[in-house]
Each structure stands twice: as C-alpha cells, then as structure tokens.
Length: 307
Image (cartoon, rainbow, N blue to C red; front, side, top):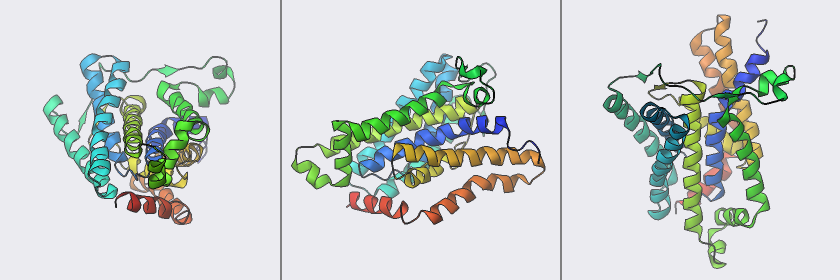
C-alpha cells in the first residue's frame, strides 16, 4: 500500500470535509438554541440540487451558490415553522424533511432536466480553484492548503467567526441563553422564538453552501441522493463537537479524512462495498465512545424543546 498516505490524500480530505463541516455548523447553531436539527441531510440535498439548477440556468457560479443558499434557507423555514410555531417533535420534523427533499429533488430532476438518476452538462463550470499566494510555493503545505474552492476557505472563516460570535458577543450569549433556559431568557426580555428562527435560517444557509460545495466543488453534477448520509455524519460531528464550532471542526475533519481514505482504498484492489463502509463505521465507533457526552445531552434538549 505504498502511496496511501500521500499529499493528495490530505488535500482531498479538505475538499470532502467542507460539506460535512458547513452542515455540522448549521446543526450546531440549531442545537445552541435548543433545536436538534435532524433535517441536515435533506437541506444539503436541496442545496446541491438548486446549485446545479442555478448554474445551468444562469451560467454564473456566484449566482448559483446564492440561489442554493436562498432555496435551502426557504426550505429550512418548514423546519422552523413546524418545530417552533407548531411545537412539533423536532426529530419527526427533521426526518420528514429528509424524505421530502429526496422525493422533491428526484421529481424536480425529471421535471426540469427530463433525466433520471443524474444530470451532467459539460458546458457547466464548477467552483473555481484558488491558489493562495506564498503558501502555494511552500513544499507539501502548499499542495495541501492551496488549490481549493472558495467555499473550503470560507468554511474555515465561518468556524472562527462563529466561535467569536457565540462566546465573545452579547448577541451570541443571548443565543446561548435561549437554548439553555428559554423560560429564564424570556423573563429578561429575550425573544426566544425570534432567535430560534434566526438560527434555523442560518442553518439553512450553511446547508445550502454545503450542498453547493458537494455538487459544484467536489464534482460538477447532481445525482439522486448524492448526499449519501453526509447530513447524518454532520449531525454526529455536531454532537461530538458539543455544538462548539472548533470542536465541530475537529470532528468534521476526522470524518472527512475517513471519507477520503475510503475513496483512496478503492484503488488498492479492496472491495468497493467494504471501503464505502469506512466513514460510517468510524461514525458508529465515535458515537459509542462519546455517547454519554454528546447524544444524551442533545437528545435531552430535543425532548425539552418539543414539549
């Protein structure tokens, strides 16, 4: 297995981790306000499909990404309305939105492009790759960090920005208070429902970016169900990271690296079905070791918010 752990593997890990990281950050924001967002998978799928639609119709990559963000943001309103306004169980709502997104994108693929399974147009261009000045000339480091899409670098800035926002600003502390103790937050005049809606919308926008990176950054096409469980892996990364942006980034890096490794292993005469299991097996193992610190806390918050 010479050449398994080379520079290209780590560079690939940065690309594959970005959709997971962006969606996980969206899940972390929702968790901070007391909403356990299981609908990340569906929101990512909507973002991936609408990014391709926007790119195909306009030919402008920036407009395509913004269109994906807007559509996913609107889609996330369904989660917000049913969970916050109607007080429905957030787990049931999230799972329902996942199934709805799968059916909706499959139907739209046939209605808009008149194809089944996948859509690809050679005239479409994916997200451009950016070479970082000075860093690109550094041996090894430049090969790993340079030459990625703008969304890869944007995801890093979002992690740092959210870390500062949540723990260094007044609005961030209000957001945390709305999730930790909604009753106490309301007693001092904090509009909990408004903050929760804002968190859901921001989560939808981040999932839109995640989907755009998946369909325009990693590849330039859309296939039915192309998220392939990445939304659920992002959910696990949210829980393992304790809804802390830096912790979520670390957990996402683990899962992104394992996904890249599973792809690399396919070139070493290993069964494809075996290599495809690697990221999900690691996810299950991680959940087993951190179950007391992550899942129970998030599930408790979900149960309290659904009452």
